Image (tube, rainbow, N blue to C red; front, side, top):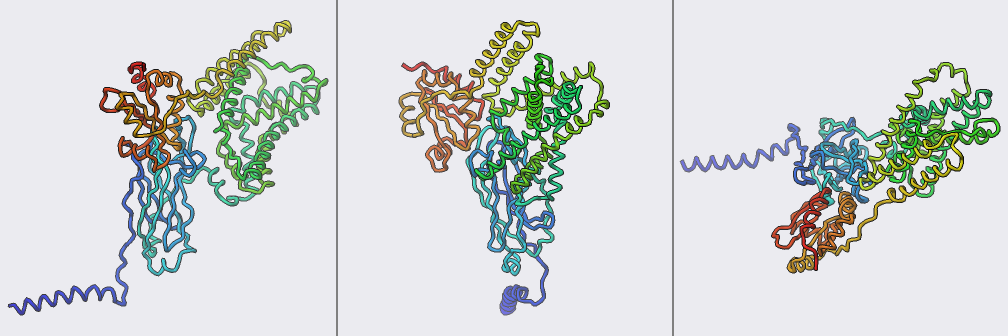
Length: 607
């Protein structure tokens, strides 16, 4: 019995050693075992109920093999899509892959969506569930990858995550996975909704389509500009005025129409010159839509639209002097017509749209002669209907005859202009929006004075006195309301834990504002809370020690203490230490002014 047991034990040992060796060394290929690894999700950011994670998965996009980075999360936590609109340079979302066996192409990101940040600006972000694809450059793969099949892949994800309330610390995470190159044809197919045409065209090194197609697209873009709401009110008025001024002369009608077209072309020529200056002098390009990031442009355009809307309502009229309307002053008539054309082109900018963006963006990737030609073709497309209409007066008979409907149409267009003006103002920072709205009301009153308080029979002296008063009121209101609000002067102290402890022992209230240079919400808190005179006055009057804790750098004392001592995940957060209170008051996010003011008012005045 004992000998049988020994024999059985030896048989088991022999099979345990021999079977794996036999399988490993057999000349026949065994069944293929899937070795691709779908990486476990890694959490990138979290704040309260908001979170975002990412995982890796081998995938194909069309015929391209590569690595899909699968992002999953809530909609309010977002990453920045563009370096230009990120809180700081280099904080846009980046995805980079590397391996000892493969070369990778540039990561392909999905279409972003717009998010209104605490400063009131529209920025491009990625949020919620989305995919990023990093293609493998197949023709550059090394022999080692093909021979070994299995390869380790490493993907680095970096950037900054924010919610509508706080910005978390910048992060850099590394995800790893293993793929089986021999199984690439069976990898999961994914599709990514690519960015708008503007972004796709700007990032390529050459034209995505033929030059003639691009030129046709540019002309079509300009043509369609004529039906945009911002331009539509100007068009019928200008066409009718050209014919009214030139009833007696077909040649003059054609000349005035061409002058109007020249004004349109002049505007686009200015854009072409700007493009040349930026590319030669600054090695950058003017992207259609960049001007909407300039508060001065937004304010000027919105106020211009308000004035034009008042003109549509009949609050004032533009009386053309006989020297301009008649033959006595043809040059002035041509100048006025050109100015109206320039204005019509300028008014087209708030109503820009995808096809115009595509045509203009294509021009940025070309050599200067082609770029200039494409931009001018946009203007030619916009000007072409007026050139045709004014050179062929017989077409006028096909237009509806003037009547009550024309006045109603004119007034309706005034409301359209007001809607566009309000839309432009929504892009302004909240701290400036209210003052611009108040000024718009004052400006409307002054325009009403200018046009409604006088008539053709009003004596010149009285007329100019009334209009001078209107101008003075408008200028005074502009000086008072339009400048950017001044920041209140708070004597902030640098963050120092010892100084804070000493103040607490002395029963002195302490206010710590944790902020960072890359935090847009922090900048909004500065303007809406700590820039206010009432808050600054309370801090001074109550003897509060104001401390600014800068967490821009990861290794700064304020950054370390924010996490280790105060257990806060991100900024902005204001912490108020009050005498006779064990736990500090924590104020998160943007809307903290009322609560902070209440706590400060309850404090006794300093001696």
